[in-house]
View 1 (cartoon, helix red, strand yellow):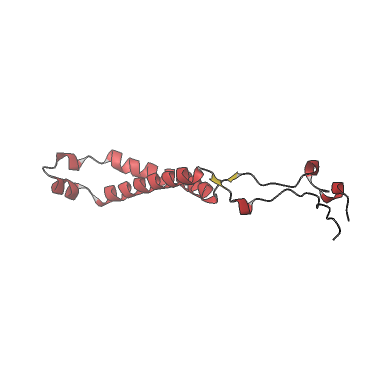
View 2: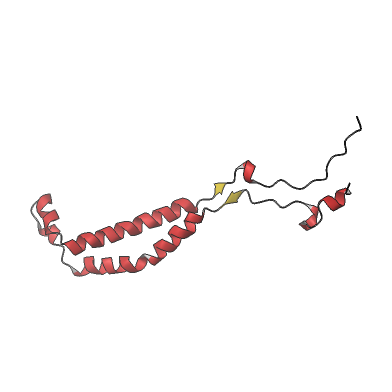
Length: 117
């Protein structure tokens, strides 16, 4: 039987390794990176919407306003909506989630001496 000091050999300060109580979700990095890269299509979409005159504002009714929007403006709006969704998902997954107790490693301790039967 090993002495108690040898049971924790190789561990820093003689204690077992313990994972942090919270961990970051890998999806947070994915959606964060995607939202950063999606800035380029969104910049193009803003250019399309900024250069085109707002024809829907001069329309008489909602139906005429929707008909006045061109296809590239609809696509630009969809690109901007995608940017908003990616930013929201990155923010949502950024919050740390608690690690379940079963997933945590327990510290290595010396086995307790048993009394003979």
